[in-house]
Image 1 (cartoon, rainbow, N blue to C red):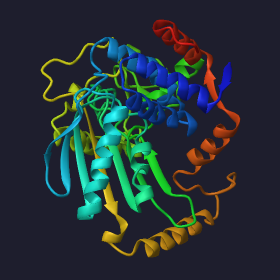
Image 2 (cartoon, rainbow, N blue to C red):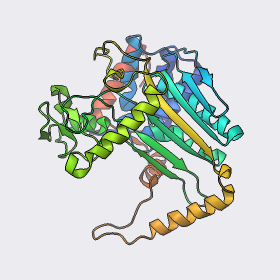
Image 3 (tube, one colour):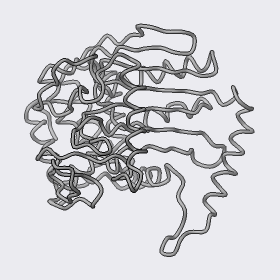
Length: 358
């Protein structure tokens, strides 16, 4: 069962929740914008379904609603940002803006972040660069739920990567993907529907393939992109490791199995080597490489040619990264955002907690 809500309804409610947590009006509005962008773009696992999780982290004193986000080290083209345990939904846009500002001056900007929390969808932050004729990159480490190839131990997060590239008349190229076969949020959606997971998404505690969507609750693990060695899981393992190192080892955040878990009820790892979750952002000014208009015209040509690629039997067309989310956003902003019953009930509980109307 689902109920349809307008973007405005979900946005207003989310702003009120963040304000009730103690966020400033500006931070509450920004956090809500980032969070609801996931629902609008059809990434339901990272939108309002996560709101109660942020509330529980705040209740556990793991989220600082009034952080002093600051640059703690920098060069003309790089910086390290300390998020002061703030909402990643607020810390990440601050850091991405630093990367953009540095790219404006130096051609490229690279920012690593420590002491942060879950930052929503990576694509939102990467796309901030588009309006400046820049290429944007965003990545983050996350709760350790993923077993490296040949292991049963959970060592990495889903560790997404997003890259946004501007075009001229064509919509921007926006790749936003987890480095696992499936993001944990998709597993949570299956759990709410009491449905099985496809083979290759998870393994049980012995390292065997399973379709049990609840495998993580029984000491199982998510699988790296590729699912097993024969299908290239070592590549997903490598990608997830790169994200972990760029986001956390480089910044001073906690990495690997020490990354702070998103569920507030999961105990924090012992002997954590850093502070909070880590992120990594990049911005590259296109005209640092070639004239921006010329580049964007060629991006149009690239996109147009790939759209015209002959589809395989049974498929209507070839998609460009970002197409499904853009099309979903257009539809949902017009007709509303579906919220499954389990999430709606979760939001009602949050509303009662803060005495807010939902």
